[in-house]
Length: 514
Image (cartoon, rainbow, N blue to C red; front, side):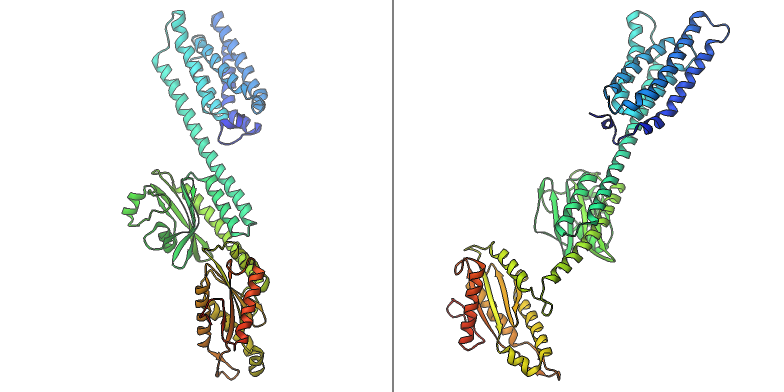
């Protein structure tokens, strides 16, 4: 265990020397006073020798500690324990010399050693020193048959030892936790500032929470369709996916709706007192303490970050401030990731219609198809606008472009949110339908045709004109084709069979689908 591990934070040699300097100066002053006292008239030879010997030894030992011992604590950790033992033995000697020296010397020197040891090397070496000093003080008189110390002397040293050591150790622990949190925030800020991928941002938020807070549960929720989707949800060793929390009747919803942080040290008591309902998600047991804070992008609350514990009073105001700092950094990173996603998506879209472009549609359709099976087939519709060249010639390319946009919007409104629509080229579109069999695909193709018939198209004179019809071809994976290219080719063949059969038709292997 390195020397720094006695602390919640590391110390340099210069820092140790500065921190030990006040106590060491007190020690030098005391021993210098003993040297001066050694030359006071009227002292017996034994008193003079005791003052002179303790003064010279104390000054030499103090200088040795400051100049030589402090700089090598990092390299020779054994010296920490050796010094504690040696200090305890010397303190015992000082105690038995006190009747021949200045009154109160022992208590002041012992207090200075306790403070110095507690500040420099922590709790346990300090207690080792105190145990040895008290052991000699109490045990030696019993061994050699002389009167022991007055109980008040023992109690005084014991109180100083425990009080000073625990106060300093607790202060160092608090500073160490604070430094650890600052370091976690610094690392998170650096990494989040350069992250543009949503999954990576969520992972970095997770790491920041884990490194700075003691928690059993944490989650990042994003507002979506009047509820909160938990994009990241960890609960006592397990990650949960696809969890949604209502805005009404939940702590997360309260944070989002009220746009402010919430700290509940005792969740059951505080939820009743503040009239805030909570909902159990994840593991089937309620958290005992909870805190959450909004994720803001500009003036908009887009979600929230929360942590929870199965113990009461786990969090305090400092923890909430740390969570708010993480949320602020996370919000900026989420905003950057959203902008990046938007820019990246734009590069994959057809500039006129907003449908996926040819290459990106093919890539996404192939990915969806790889997840398909006999039980969950994947369908593809190839759609072509009938006589679109004649339509363009009659009404002009501007009306033609507006019609392409309107048809794309109509197709998108006729399919599921998980389906894909891409512009294959010119007036031809491709529609990917995951988890759709032949009957379901035929129903969707009919719905597209029906909705297009109701489409309102205006000519250059702002008069309604009849919308063009469409022909469609359907192919099913894996029943009818074994890869994406054969699937497209089959759907294309059926599209042209529909055109050859008179247009405004649906080509499919399913009987009755036309």
